[in-house]
Length: 218
Image 1: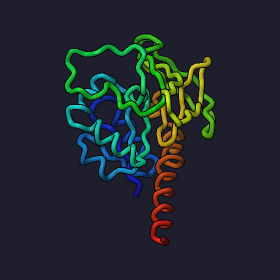
Image 2: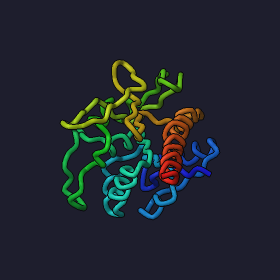
Image 3: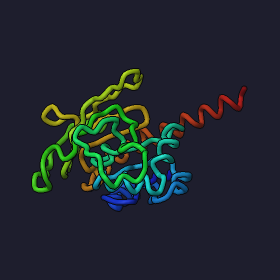
Image 4: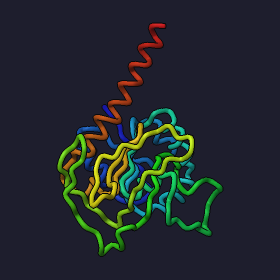
């Protein structure tokens, strides 16, 4: 059975676990680096990005996630999860409780993120989205960030925008990373999770199997 990890340090990880189970895949709560050894993909949920990063650093999960990503593991970052994987956080403040010299984010996706860009909790909202390759989806935005394309010098990775609202990017993909500024786990609709499973997780598994088959023939 396909196993997908959900970073379970803080935030809305239980809701993602429930959504994955509805998709008939095994959900694994990831709390330690060893938990990543058994998964075919990883979801980084919404929550408080600063707290999440501190805990990742504390348990050295940040290093393991980067290693697994570099080896092809698909990642889906939702809301705070998108902040965690961004290459630039436009309104981040250095915290005096920095636990290590590692970066504030995982520095993986060519996006710049503005935290809490729509306002406070009271400014949360829902909106119907038209997502490329998925269709209509009711997006739930809670203290949502805003995403912008951020291509660092020398980058060869192209960010593909999948959905916008009022000209703001709310969903995008880049190689083996899927990003959303909304919470797909807070609806009864599992189509976004199914898309991640189908296009990213199973897609990557097929690539690995194909590569292994080619090597075997050599």
